[in-house]
Each structure stands twice: as C-alpha cells, then as structure tokens.
Image (cartoon, rainbow, N blue to C red; front, side):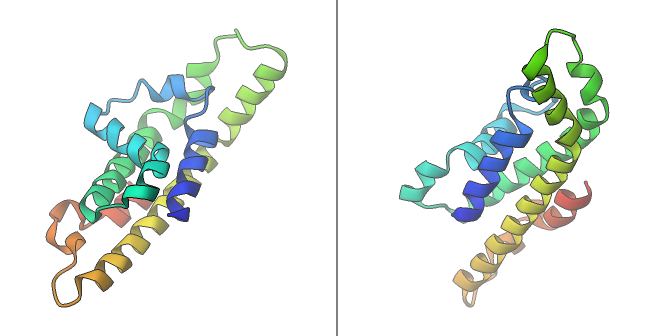
Amino acid sequence: MRMIERLGEHYKTNISNRYIRPALLQLSLNKTTWDNVENLTEKSEQYRYEGFHFNELYRQIAATARFIVATRREVAPSLRYRLNDGSATGPDKVLRDMAVNTFSANLELFSKMLCELYVRVKDIDSINAKDKRPLYQQTPEFDDLEDLILNG
C-alpha cells in the first residue's frame, strides 16, 4: 500500500502537477487508460479500505506503463516548447521552469517506482497462487510489462 501511495504522491507532485498537466492532457490515450492511471495514482485511500484485486492492479499498472511510454514519446521531447507561452512571470515562471527541467528525470523515477510495484505485486501474486499459476502468467498483456515500463 505504501508503494502505491508513494507512486501517487510522485505522480501528483512531479508528473501531473499544474504546470505539466496541460501538456499531458494532449496525450493520445483512451478514457479507460486515463481512468486506470487515475485509479492507481489518486485513489489509494479508497483501496486502503477495500483492498486491491490483482486483476485491477495489473490493469492499472499496464495502463500506467502505456501512459509512461506515450509521455516519453509525445510530451517529454517538446515539453519546454509546449508550455512556453510567456504568460508565467515571477515565482510562477521559476516553478514552471523547475517542473519542466526536472520532468524527464521525474518520469524515469516514476517508471522505476512503477516497475518496483509491478515486481512486488507479481511476488505477492505468486505467493497467493500457491499451486496455481499466478494471474500475471495467465494474461498475455502482462508478459513484457516490466520491459515496457523501463524501456518502452
């Protein structure tokens, strides 16, 4: 649970903050992907009481991996130009520039945190599966998820 909370905090503070969010909203991701990313990064309090189901958690991790891949490809290379409209001044401009300058590093840290979560969930899934195959081995979408998160 703590890993999910840390992931969500990092996402809100460094990835989808008020300076970067306008560029992220231009990503070509479907609503289901956005909903799954939001559920993983912003609804941890809800899951603290209800718990996670492995299939939901894997779907959320996979959606967040797709978000990372799209963000690396579509947003990170041109972020500075997308947000340089000249409207920010003073402290706001400094904070926006800091968010832009650290975005790629923060996105990579986010991907490492997501990969760490994925590995941990797989371990718990394997332990809980006992004599059956864990869920991640039953779903082809999750076969190369770790590689997609880190290298996609």
